Amino acid sequence: MADPAPAAKSETPEKLVIHNIGLMLSGRIEEPILDADCVICVDGKIAEIGRAKDMDQEGATTVVDANGITLCPGLIDSHVHPVIGDYTSRQQQLGWIDSTLHGGVTTMISAGEVHVPGRPKDVVGLKAMAIAYQRFYSNFRPSGVKLHAGAPVIEHGMEEHDFKELAEAGVTLLGEIGLGSVKDGKTAAQMVGWARKYGIQSTIHTGGPSIPGSGLIDADMVLETGTDVVGHINGGHSALPDDQIVCLCENCKQALEIVHNGNERAAILTLNTARELGKLDQLILGTDGPAGSGVQPLGILRMIAMLSSLGNVPAEVAFCFGTGNTSRRRKLDTGTIEIGQCADFVLLDQAQHAPGKTILDSVQLGNLPGVAMTVIDGRITSQRSRNTPPAWRVPEMR
Image 1 (cartoon, rainbow, N blue to C red):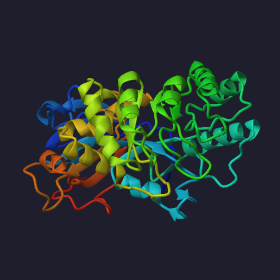
Image 2: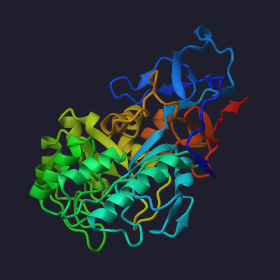
Image 3: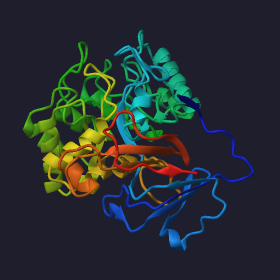
Image 4: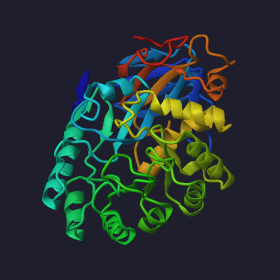
């Protein structure tokens, strides 16, 4: 089930046509539903969006009849902890990334490869490991999933030139601040500044300790550090007190990340506070797996359904939290249905016998949809999911 990085382009363009789409979700929170029933992709990029009757479908190398179901940007998991390939030593499990693809996720972002046995904590070793992981997952895509990895956990002794060297080697992420030896806001803020100077994005652990050896990161440290992402604002696992969560929502302009592996009540508090402040565009989703609670292949879908149902958010908006919001905050070329973006999609339908008049009604009632197909870079990577409840309808390919 493994797929290497995309092969070199052939002289004949690969043209994917998906037509007869019943509902197209854009991933863009300002316009979550598109008036379109067809998308055309060329060499892995979205080339046209519109009504099939007005579009040139000739010369397609792959045609998918969506059979009236929903097309959504591929879901993005903003917070994972990979180990090697599609194996995690945290749960002694193979195939967790492939299982997550069957939950509609086409892109993952590492918050640090912290579960690697013997993870080096000296500066030379941690830099070497980060560069190696950036290379591993650039060269190898488990089941086709895009995993942005190589996220070093900062340690005392790092200097500005270390971040410059990491950036020059292709590293674009920092692992969760607070999981290493740097646990004070002043030092962390200095290192975050160095990272940002060289184009490296940062995330901070928020809340109580996740495992023995980690520690509390409270709102004061989060604000002082000033990372690009407030990692698991609803705790991973333990959330901060309500007043601190509200304080972060009020004072942060950064991404507010809600995770499956956190406190559900705190997630709803974050959602409600962000809505009152007009900051729904800052909400992004992750699973924070693999972790002590295991692997969550349907974690992003579950977060969408939970936030929509218990948070009283239209389902089409909740889908944006796990697609376009994350894409924009993470500076990705996927996650929205726009010309020029990567052709990464999940095709969904209402689950068989689930209540609700439509798929959106059903999700807002708290039900998971059925994943019927995933597409990455214009290539079909999975068909009817083995993990979600079965979709009523499935696409047909020719």
